[in-house]
Image (tube, rainbow, N blue to C red; front, side, top):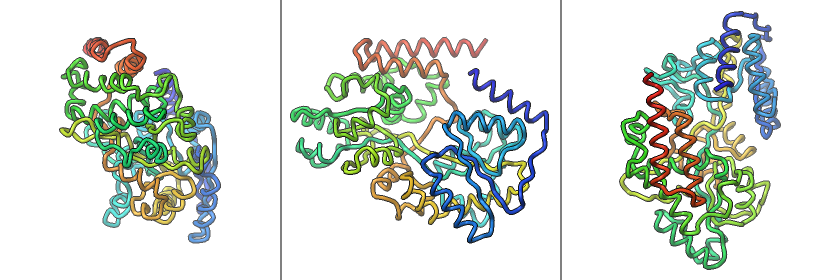
Length: 428
């Protein structure tokens, strides 16, 4: 919360002081980014664009991400932002940048030429940068950012370890998964690992099953305070973690394991299944180039509602509203997100392309992740979001269930109590 107010204060100051923008050559575009793994290919693409258009493009790398974010805030304060940059923060912070006049509305650009640009990109990625009518941020409806890649979080399986346990194909249902857990344990293989020491990843897994068990409408009703967290369906969601624990599916120490350590466990074949994002393709390539694995949706527990996974834009760029080279910047982003450039980025960086037309030219494992994009959702595109204290109680409750400290019912009741308190505070 303190960080939020500091950002808002900086942006408000920037808006009020009205410092002058440094002049930029009429044929040059400057882009700030934080992606250390992409600088080389970005420079190659810049050279290619120069050859094709005679427009200079300069990618300036600032890392780590915290240092980058601080630089962007300081530049906004001094009105010296480049033509193109990224905003690494919550959607509310993007809204603050828009209100302060630092981000161009690209809606008309996406709609131009029979919406060809918009239609070529994954809509779920665009949604992260889109503000719908009557949004809670008070932003004019429109699209304000350009995704350059997409990501989603799914389950992965080790093909060799499954074969060793006599498992011929990955499970589709939760019951099939539990049978596979038993088969893996019989041959001494740890069934499942994930970085659930990081609360967001456990929360993501729980969200998958909340959608599967009760559906979007009931989840949103819960966030609005119309359905309590001790409702039977929410207890079923918590019970998934109790059952995984009791079935012996989880690697020991999973609630204290950071995702990097969980990635090492899976890459070094210490577990047959894991839960991770599409960025892991690049990670596993470095950790174990010979790893044979596949991608699957988490196994469904119910057939009543579709299982949803978290996903959307991985990295996005915005255009500086104040730049005199705004048109050049938009044209470059159209080129960067075109099929050929997106395919090159995908191959070089092992990230999913934002352009759906580039999927035919990407590695098979990335293509497998891409198949899940139609099943994605994300809190950033939901009409409302849960109170942070409720989310914290929810996620810590999951950890308490896994280590056997609390029952699913007890956690559901505790989360319901926190929700009631937070709702009461809002009404004051």
